[in-house]
Image 1 (cartoon, protein in one colour):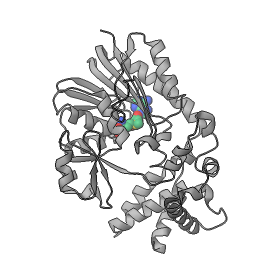
Image 2 (image 1 turned 90 degrees about the vertical axis):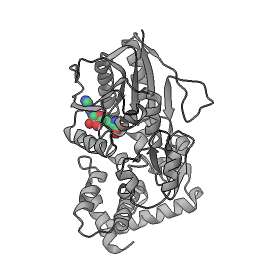
Image 3 (image 1 turned 135 degrees about the vertical axis):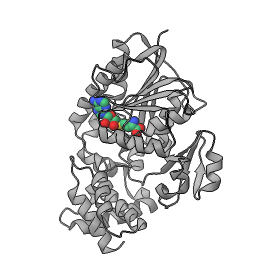
Length: 374
Ligand SMILES: C[S@@+](CC[C@H](N)C(=O)[O-])C[C@H]1O[C@@H](n2cnc3c(N)ncnc32)[C@H](O)[C@@H]1O
């Protein structure tokens, strides 16, 4: 990697903070770096993320540029000789100390966190085979419509992406949509829609028939959602602001509501290693409270016989299980709705699913499913 690229990576690292997360700083800096080749931009991203992934191994007294080079060397060593890092060392350095107080930390998860993330694609329903014939370096996955991408091209520039033939979407996130299992013609509400990753999936599963309300508290995220929906040729949605309060965006009752709630995000720490060092223990408790409120408010919108899905990309019991149990106690009119996980089709159906990254190759996620009694 050239010194200029390392210097740019150092600039991003220096500007990153809890208020200015590294992925956003990176996007801004890459946009303003005149004449930077696509490949070089990829190298800078890799260097920034390597720095945060290996942060606790780096020499505090060395320059930032030197530390970034050290991090890139550590990444190579880890790929070639993973056993040269012990489980104890990984537990002490790969995540902050407080994590072990929130959840039991499997060594295999720590090893997963130190590797570079996989790139997952989602084809239109039933079109994965066709897409695999058009794109290079893709492998079909056992999960419907999912593909693993192993190339290095800028997928956002591919004509198939521009034509809405595929989305970049993490595999566990794809499974959330499959567990929602919306049917064509139904009315759904994606209550924390963000930039629309799951809205687009729900719309595709509904074959663009029926309606999805997509809400978020953030206007800029909804703006991105509208842009993405236009490219994906998704038209059966209505975007609306919702601050999470008692007043819902519509009086309509829904066949299904997905609350993909804000969370501590531990499940994304492989893809987003900067978040390991900016998330604080009080976030877990605070976000669990917000999740409980969002579920309680959204629940009033579910039709009799309709479904409620709670999803978070984290694995702390205080968020996942405890929030799900609190919901069940507060809303006895909702009963657990067991479903088979697409990751383990031979296993018994369950109403609560934990997807650990080291088992799925994707983000860590928790999903709970209920049905409102008829
Ligand atoms: C996990 S993200 C959603 C990701 C999105 N569903 C996707 O698949 O791309 C959580 C979202 O909840 C939104 N959010 C946070 N607090 C909220 C609140 N109190 N009410 C409504 N939305 C909220 C955030 O703006 C964020 O977009």
